[in-house]
Every structure is written in structure tokens, then in C-alpha cells.
Amino acid sequence: MSRQADPDPVVATPAGAVRGLRDGSGERYRAVPYAAAPTGATRFAPPAPHPGWSGVRDATRPSPTAPQPARDFGRLDMVPYFGPGWVPGEEYLTVDVRTPAADDGRRPVMVFVHGGGFVTGSNRAALYDGGAFARDGVVLVTVNYRLGIPGFLDLPGAPANRGLLDVLAALGWVRDTVAAFGGDPGNVTVFGQSAGATLTGALLAVPEARGLFRRAIVQSGSGTGAFTPEQARRVAVTAAAALGVEPTAEAFAAIPDERFLTTLPALTGLDLRTSTATDPLAGLSPFSLVLPVQPADGLADGPADDVDLLIGTNSEEGHLYLVPQGNLDSTTEADVLAVATRVHADPEAALAAQRAARPGGTPGELRSAVLGQALFESGTTRLAQAHARISGGRTHVYSFGYRSTALGGRLGAAHTVELPFVFDIADEPWLHGNTRLLGPDPAPAGLAARIHGAWVAFATTGNPGWAPYTPDRPEVHTLA
Image 1 (cartoon, rainbow, N blue to C red):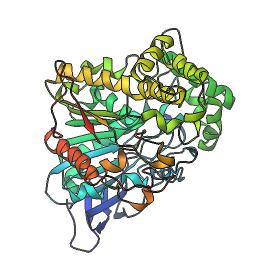
Image 2 (image 1 turned 45 degrees about the vertical axis):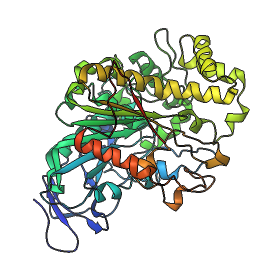
Image 3 (image 1 turned 30 degrees about the vertical axis):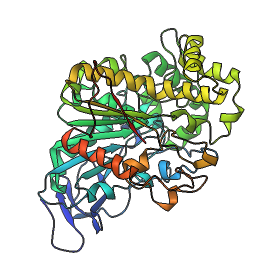
């Protein structure tokens, strides 16, 4: 195990040795495979063990990324969030590791699962630079996983939720390997944001996840964001029709990734309402987990009762989907009703509740509130409540309220705005400017240090620094 005494650190892993780089925060190892490359038919198979390599593998450059479309968020620069997009290459089931030192330190480990609507994103995104975690004594592992059709389209002949299976495989790699990078495999915190948070929440209900992590952090995810099998079948049939093939894994295995991406527009806005379910993603993505029971209702099946949970949302989540496109001001009452109808079984009652909570709210503000509640807040609350009932004081809940001054001060505490604070990079110049995530104003002094410090404290001890959320005292801590 461990490293050689040359300027470039070398770590011996079970699959082979890797050479990384040292910097001011410690050591960094990039593009380390945790599973075999998914190609051809294996794109629709469970992740397989990597065959390993001889010699010393270069781990100084980033890996390819999962096939994915370009994303456009209007006037807001979201490149730091989505990263470079699709960087073609077969071997993208990889992790990056940031560590203070690859020694025998047995430090807390944090495993980050990126967001991107189950169709985009990678660990190459600038927001996920883990230097601050390594600086503060944490080993950070960031994970790539299959996206879109290979990752989440439910097909006969293929296991469901292959992207989630990838995350499970990555956690298995961490268990077996992270000690070589100075981490403690018995003190692992898995955390994710958006789609990555929904995947993280699902791990709490998956029996196969038991023993793979000790703590979990769910940032703007949902414990009720899974599609039913009926909804997933509707997506698969539509995708197959667009491709001109049968909706089976065998038929899809012969199709190149490029064609999958050209098919995605045919799935945009697909109506997934059924007689038993509303659309949990409000038409924003045709992919999600596919489960017969929502994670918030299935925690008894997984490791949740043994896991500490930190969970929360931002106070204006829905603004991300309206402000950059200019739709906050242009929204009509008809638009608000249309969104509410898509995500609520009783849209009129839901709108009445939102209006009562926001007297004088504009149609745009109501639409944002409906989106935020449906996509993140209600599912977060249900997951927090369910975990609090079984975990004995191990649940901590937050609400992030700092308002970004981007786009003329309108972006606010939108979806993703908390990430620069969690990663303690809120002072980076590339995050500031009218069209950048945090806007032209400087970040509040000390806010990033407090939030990042809470995440590190939670990963170390299970206590972020505020009272737990319990059925009798459902306390929500404000971060602003």
C-alpha cells in the first residue's frame, strides 16, 4: 500500500498502482476506475469489476464523461455546475480522490454524487473541486455514473436503475480501497445534490447499501422523486419509437450513444401523469429512479436506521427554472395552474395553500414555489420525517436561504446556489458577475466557512452543530 518517496505520489490499489499529483491541499488522483468500461451491450448490464492494469497508471488527468447532451440555462452561466459536457471515451466509470495524504491516517471519507437531472454532469465540474475538504482533513471521492438512456431507461432484459448500481459499485470501491488513500472505510459519508441527492436518498432504502456508509447528506433531492414502473414504461416506449426499435435491452444495445442523445428531444416534456401518480419531476427530466415504492416509504428495507442524515433544501429552489429564462416575470395564472396540475392530484387546493403562504405573490413567485415544493421540498420533508421516526435523533434538517444577486438580484436562493458554500469556494472570481451563479456581490463573510465546516463536522461526528429533527421537535436550521 501507500506511496513512493518521489515528487509524484503513487498509491497501490487492488486493481493496480496509480500516480497522482501533490498541490497545496494535499494529493489528487483523477480518473481512477471503480468498474469496467460500459460499452455495447454492457451499457445495459450491472457494473462489472475492472480487470485492473499492470505498471503505474497515470491519475493526473480527468476521465472521459458519460454521454450527455449540452444544457442551456438561458442567461445564467451553469458551466461550473455541468462541467465540460460529453467528453467521449469508454472508461468513464471513475472516481477522483482528494486527500491530505495517502498514508495511514484513517480520515473521514466523503463521497459526492453529482446532479444534473439524471442526464448531465460529471465530477469534472469546477464546483466540485475538493481542495477545501482535503485541507480540512477529509478524503473526498467524487463519482461519475451512467446517465440518460444507459443509466436510467427501464428496459426488459436490463437491470433497473443502472446509474444507482454504479454508485453502489463506487461505494464498494471506497470500502475496499480508500484506506490506501488515507481514508477510514468505517467512516464514510455519501452526499449528493439534486439528482445526486435523490440517488443518495434512495441508498437509504436499498438493502445492498447496508454497511457501505455511515452517514448521508441529501442536498435538494427528493425522497419521492422516483417514477412508477408504469411511468418508466411510457418513457421507454416513446424512446423506442423515436429510435425505430423495440423497447428491449437487446435492441438498444446495438445503438450508438450519439443516437441516444439525438433522441432526447422526443422525450422532453413527456406527460407522465397516470391514474395513480403525478409527475415527480414536473416534466423537467424524462429519467429518474424507477421503484415500486418511493424511498421515503421504503426506509425499513435499507440501512437508514443505522445512518446519520443531514438533509435540506434551498428557500427558492424553483427560481433556477424560471429566472434565467426570463419566465419569472412572464408567467401567467394559466402557467401556474398548468404546473400545479402536472404535479398535484388536487391542483386547486395546492395553489390555495401557496397563495395563503404568499399573500400578494406574483404568478411567477407562485409558479416557482409550486416547482420547488413538488421537485424538492415535499419529498425532502417526507424523507426527513421517515428517517426521524426510525433513527433515534440522527436526523438534522437545514434550509439554505442566502440569495444570490445574479441576474439583477432575481436568482435568489435558487437550486444549486448552496454548492459553492458547501465546497468553500464562494470567493472564486469565476462564480461572480451578473450572469454567474453567485452574482456580482461578494459572498457574505464567513458563510462558506460555516456551511463547509458544518458538512465536515457532520462527516466526522454525525453532528453538524445544531439540534436534531425529531417527530416531537421538527427543527429546521437556517443557513444564510
